[in-house]
Amino acid sequence: MKARRILFSVAAFAAMLLIWEFAVRSFDFAEYMLPPPSEVAMYLWGAVCDLSLPKAVWVTGKRLFTGYAIGLCIGIPTGMLCSRFNIFKDTVGILALGLQALPSVCWVPLAIMWFGQEESAMLFVVVMGTVWSLILATQHGVANIPPIYLRAASTMGSRGFHTWLHVIAPAALPSIIGGMKQGWAFAWRSLMAAEIYVTILTGFGLGQLLHYGRELMRMDQVIGVMCVVIAIGLLIDKAVFSPIESNLRKRWGISSD
Amino acid sequence: MSNIHAELENVTAKLVVDDVSKTFNSARGKVEALKNVSLKVGEGEFVCLVGPSGCGKSTLLNLVAGLDKPDSGTIKVDDTPVSGPGRDRMVMFQEHALFPWLDVFDNVLFGLKLKPNLTNPERKEVAKFYLHLVGLEKFAHSSIHELSGGMRQRVALARSLAPNPRILLMDETFGALDALTREQLYGELQQIWQKRKKTIIFVTHNIREAVCLGDRVVLFSPHPGRIVNTFEIDIPRLRDINDPALSPYTLEITAALKQHTDGREVAE
Image 1 (cartoon, each protein chain N blue to C red):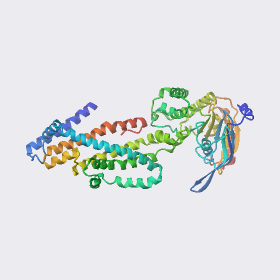
Image 2 (cartoon, chains in turn blue, green; image 1 turned 60 degrees about the vertical axis):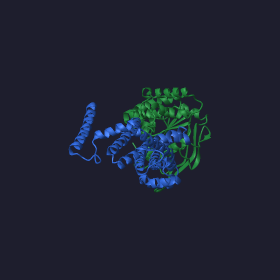
Image 3 (tube, helix red, strand yellow; image 1 turned 90 degrees about the horizontal axis):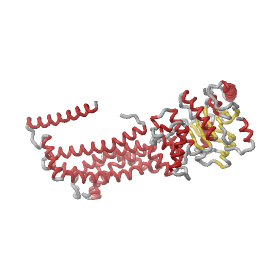
Image 4 (tube, each protein chain N blue to C red; image 1 turned 90 degrees about the vertical axis):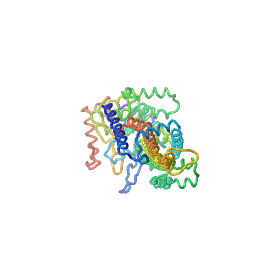
């Protein structure tokens, strides 16, 4: 059954590509409006061979993962502080609630003023995208831990840091993972927007590649880069978050979707 | 079992609750959960606290556990005042309170890991021993959600016993289980209690359950929460919940309970 579904899925996508190719060729669209998929594939192949694409993926990936890692290091502990101390909750917590609603690409003008056209400006945007939803998810996750876990742990002699590490953190983990996933989605989108929006002199990312595709009227490049952006998004979701989530579901017995 | 009490007269009690009061603030004003309650429990004794809801029996258990502090009066275990939760007094709640992020074995190991002066292989041996004792060694690496309600409470029992507490505090531990599983666990708990020589304080609102398990049944009455009577249960072990010999005690305690309440609050 599963093999048949995969086969059907592959066939459907192949058919879509064929229709696209056929439509472009038979209606004679201008190349700068919509290139056929074969052109896109040619571009992708060429860009892989001349290393412009791998280099751009590397530059963007480095920004994304560094910024995301910084975001995790700030967001999770801050979220825990917010859940524990009202001083944090009533300040940082409210700030997080507000800033979470702000698409982090809105930070780009300020980031350029503060950091210049440098890597740090990009990192700042990624961190701003990651950190707020992570703070909220962590705070929420910790606040919703059933008190009975803490009572049980305390009767077994767990105190202070041990409780945080061995009870509160794992009990809040499903919520934190949810926040990580959302933070990742925000970070990825805002980094792309920022890269298209401003040229960073220290490195050429995927966003810049897409931007220059438009300037050169090379829609095969634009669509090719879009495909890579989609592929990376899917890959991270399937290779990183899906296994973690299914593992969690298996352990916790949260009903599968 | 009455010779236990004869012995107790000479031995200092394991647990001494002396003139303890506890008041909670609720929406409808102050609630006197416990008023001037005193109780002595001997080493190795199985004491059941019964009474309608709101009579303070669970409050007393939490005070003994150190999860809460009395407003006045003292609680001493082995002549040492209780100042907080401790490994010498393990609590089993009505909910199993097992950690879903750990498997069965690691749940049992949790309290052991916090116990100093043991090597890790020793801890694992102890955890295995108690899992075997509750008959779940085959499920060591199962997830908690894969177990039935009765199995979960067995794991919770193993987890509470593993750090070798001297006192086991059970708060309506079997309340959420189906009748069949409960009856089975009555037998198992009595056996484990005899084997491991624990002092057990068992809170329940089910009088028959209390008579089946306890050497002594302490009857509480609400508003304010206080002890109104104590009954020695002189029936040989292992007792069965369906044994007719329990009935005279059950009737006597139920009658006493009705005397102290208007009868509407009597549960089961």
